[in-house]
Each structure stands twice: as C-alpha cells, then as structure tokens.
Amino acid sequence: MPKLDRDRLESLAAELLEKQFKRVPKMRELHRGEWIDRDYYIRHITETVLRIRLNNEVDSYALYKVGSKDDQLAAKLARYLAEEFGHENMFTRDLQKFGLTIEELDATPVLSSTAKLMGYLRLEADHDGPAPTTIWDWFVEWYSDRYNPVITDKAAEEFGKEYVHGTQAHIAFDEQHDHDELMFRTVSRAVENFSTPEKAEVYLTTFIDLIGDYFAELYEVTVGAREAASA
Image (cartoon, rainbow, N blue to C red):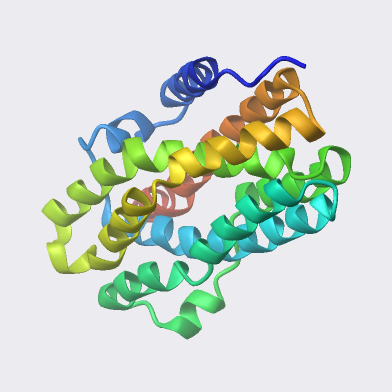
C-alpha cells in the first residue's frame, strides 16, 4: 500500500489555504500579521476554546474506533489526547483578561461552520475509523506552527502582551512536545491501516474548505455585524 507523502500533504495544505485566502475577506491579512480586530480576535479565541472541547470528544471517539485493531496507533492517539486535554484553559485566561467570563464563554453557541466540521469528523470516523480525525489533528498542528505565532504576535502588538499569555503558552507547549511530528507519525499509521493517501487528500480538502467557511463566518458575526449596525 502506498505511504502518505508528507511533502505532498504539506504542499496541498498550503495550496488549499491559498485558495481560502483569496476567497475570504481579511483572512490573508490576518495570517500575515497585517490586520487584526478586537471583537474578531476575542470571538476567534472563544471559538478556539469551544472547538478544543469538541475536538477532544471527536478524538476520543476516534480512539474508540481504533479499538484493539492497532495498539501502537491507539497509544499515539491516546498520548496526543492526554497532552491536549485541558489546553483550552490556557486560552480562557486570555479571554478573562479581555473581560469575558467563564459563564459567558460556556453560554456561547459554536459557529455553524464549527458544528459542520465537528459533525463531519464524527460521521467520517464511522467510515474510516481514526484516519479523518488524525488528518485533521495533523493539519491543526501544521497550521498552528505556521500561523498562530504570527496572529498572536499581532494581537500582542495591538492589545498588549498581557492579553496573549495563555495563547503563547499553548504555542510553546506544542513546540516543546513537537506535536506536528507526533501527529504526522500518527496520521501516517492511521491512513495506512484504515484509509488511503487518496482519501486523506479528500479529507484535507474538505477540512480546509470548512476552515475558510469558519473565517468567513467569524468576520460576518463580528466586523460585518458591527459595520451593519453602524450603517
């Protein structure tokens, strides 16, 4: 069976993100560190917390789908889960600094794009076991390595370093534990035993389309809504 090609997967991810940068207003500027907005950023970090909670549930379901079929893969996924559980608390500290309470955070409904993404991951786990979820997790780590430091540095410059302590701590943790490398080893094994490289590319394409939808929706519910109200 053909192996998953890391260079090909990374090139595809970059190519697909470029399409989203062209499609979604301000997305390119955000990821280049050229633009940020307070309401937009607070809602982005809020959604990050809500998505991490749901992602942990999806990963747990993927681990369940591995069952006893591949103990080595299960161990890798379990390690990743163990290291990720509770990480949303790093971000909640920043949100509290912005004035958002835990009660307000918990009462915030996820955006529809997030619900679609998490629902898709859960559904596809019934077809390809842990493969779709590990592809998503690898992409999250790949994306985080390349773009989260840029976005966070811009937020620190615009709002103050004290507003990004938790986010910076999460970035440092991922770098220290080399989550990008861990998840590529994990996704390679998951694809080899439960799916195919061709399907992996299909999943990645869908995920990045949904990420574009997320950034479009994020803009509309923050900057777009504010502009509409003041018009």
